[in-house]
Image (cartoon, rainbow, N blue to C red; front, side):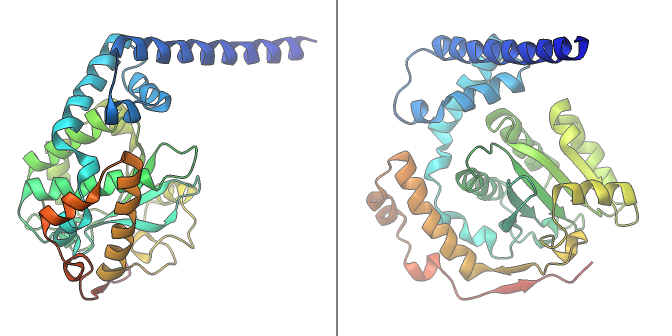
Length: 297
């Protein structure tokens, strides 16, 4: 009898908690006031919930955070970035969306900082923002977060982006994409990376910091943690798995151009003036094949 009473009590507690959180979402929507166009489309109930979670369900703090994102999106316009604008940044496959999902069905972004190929901090950020938006577009129904895999093959201080650019990226991720990251696995970073990490980890809020995991091939615990998130058959060899990581820039570009059409449809954007303005031919959009196969680690 005690067991059933306790179980019933726990069930009511969960229901009460869910109903309180739903009420908070409604409060936040009321506090935001009337929204128009893309801001209204952006501010779904699940979106408002993410901002509340990021601010420990503090209504005022969540409202301030979301209002800042609305302003940022109005000026930066991440939903208007198209692949032809950032394709040159992706030629080496330094950031790409994986062709597999993690065990929970989440979109996976693969970052390979050793493949850095440009020097413009602004363009690097724009390219990453594009791929975050694209990753969100490709989330399975019911999924809110993505997983990141970061491969340090070929990384050195010479190929690294600056601390300032890294800080700007962290600020955008934390302030404008709250609760979008499930986990980030940093696989086998070289010892020299530790100095860079010490300089940037202070920009991470505690919640994000907890999601960053270092994995070393000789550390059984860290490897097992990563494999609890990923099927070893899907994991590329660079991450201790069995799959081969191929980055074909032409094929990836074709997929991104197709997704650009979906993005425009989702946001109700007329693409004709945009394409004419940018003046990109399809040859520029989908370049000659580049096949990059990183060596197995």
